[in-house]
Image (cartoon, rainbow, N blue to C red):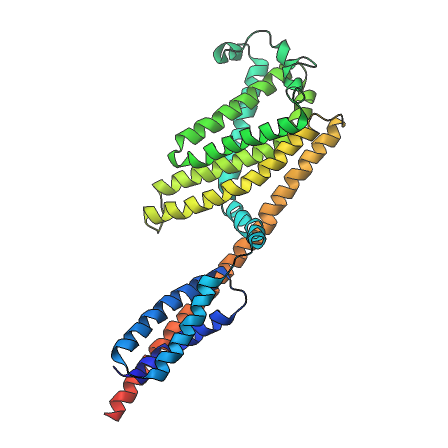
Length: 348
């Protein structure tokens, strides 16, 4: 083995490993590169130990690997920092990447609900087809079941119950999306319930009460359901059309994004539960309650299309930089190898 040529060919990679080992903070791409270089250098050291008697080079690489090992294995992750990065990068980026899917789900859902509401309101045949009793006063009258639903339980317990139920619905929509039809069925049943209720309230001349109780929490809550349905359906479509990746790789990648959205929606639905438990049944005027709901929705959309778009841009920049660094390293290594070969040929 020509130790000098071997050392020259891999020196750039060793210097890069040394640089990454001494940095206080690493990006995700740099951390992956550190692990890759550590493994590769370990293999190179083992080869040198078998074919070379240069103790100085072996000792230097051993010290380098010791530093890198401490960086790879000894790093302690700041939990709160990771939580912050999740909500500032991973979750909004996953939402932004899938927005065409959940916006599409929202459009279809609202059209179906509106169509059902008009049908129930204007056509008596709808009650027969859907099995709705002819007299729905217990539901629609002032102080009826629709209104008392939001105040018949203690606020804290009701908020917790709503949060749990909504999280369960979102989880089903997300993870049955891989089969497509179960997620579509779940979304349709929610659209049916909303449309029928709206139609009955319209028929009773009480749409003002309907919107006064639905909009404060329902605006953000339905958006969370749309996100869950859209991301779930994207997972199912990835199984059908994996694109340039293999089907296993594509589904695994989208599955990780789906899990990210599922975790993030827990926090979003917590906000929805708080609004439904404490704002919707409160004695505040309806315009104030609705304004609170619209404000929460506006913050969510700004979060997706502001923070999410920026996070996607940053991740794309990091990936591009990592690819460029790798390309430069490969080019330099190839050039060094050619130079070493040429030098050996000249010496001969």
